[in-house]
Length: 338
Ligand code: GLU
Image 1 (cartoon, rainbow, N blue to C red):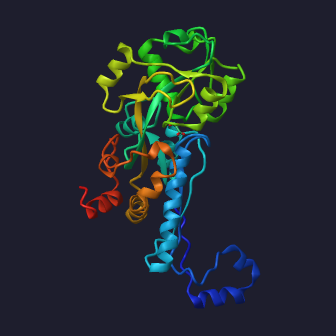
Image 2 (spheres, rainbow, N blue to C red; image 1 turned 90 degrees about the horizontal axis):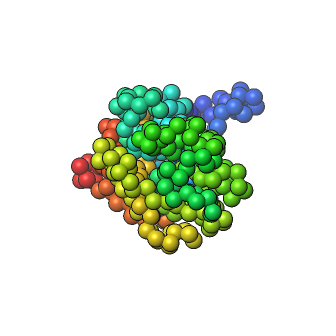
C-alpha cells in the first residue's frame, strides 16, 4: 500500500496553479516539502490491546524523525498510520496481499505463516521479520464465581474463543486440539473481539475468555479490576508438551499484584509480539522504520509498561523465525549488533 507522491518541482507547482482549481485540489502541493512522500500502514489489533500501542508508537517515532529531519536536512518522507485490526493472522494475510506494509503478529503465527505448516494462517514465503517487541502470555480470564480453575473446567461453560484473524483465536484452537476439546464441549463458543470480551464477561454473557496479550493490559483490567475476574494457571503436562515441542512457546509468569485479583504469580505459556513486513516492501522504507524505532527506543519504551524491558539485543532475534528484512539488517549492522 506504499503510495509515492511525485516530487513536484516549483515549475510544475506553477503550472498546476495555472491549470486550475480542480487539478490542484486533487494533488497535495507543498513547495517546502520537496522529498518524495511514502505512506505506510501498520496492522495492529483491537483498540484496547497492546498491538494498537505498538503500531501507533512506531508511527510516532517515524513522525518524530520526520520532524527532526526537516530541521537537520535528513528527510525520509514517510507518513504512517496504524489502524485497529482483527489481530495477528489478519495482519499477516493483509501484508501478503499488499494491503498493509507492516503488522504486529504473534511469534507462533509468524512461524506458521513462513513455514506454511498450519491451516490457521496462509503460507507466506515473503514474510519478513523486523524486530520483536513484548512477551505475550496466553491468558484465560475467568469470571468471579465461575468455578473455572483449569482448562478442564471450561467444559459446559460459555467461552470466548476470539474473533477469526486474532492471534488468540489460533492459539486457543491449538490448545483445544492439544486437550482434545471441540467447540461443542462448551455451552457456548463466542467469537467476540478483544474489545468486546471483557465487557461481555462483566455483563454475565460469557464465563471466560482466552487472550494472548502483553502485561499489563487495559482490556484485561476491565474484567479483573472491574468485576473481579481472575487469570488461571496453565501449566499442566499439555502446556509443558507444547513448550517442549515448539520454538515459539515459552512459559511466562504474570506477577502477583499485576491486577486486583492476581493474588499469586500466575504461570502460563506465551509467545512474543513481533513486528513483521513483506520482502516486497522496499529496503529504504524498512530501514527508516527500523531506525526510527531504535534511535528513539527510550521514548518508545515510555509509551506502554509492557515495553519496559525492551532490549535491542533480544529484539533483533527473540521470536523471529522468518528471515530478517534486508532494511532491518542494514541498520543492525550499522549499529554493530550483527
Ligand atoms: N495477540 C493478539 C493477536 O494476535 C493481539 C494482542 C494485542 O492487541 O495487544 O491478535
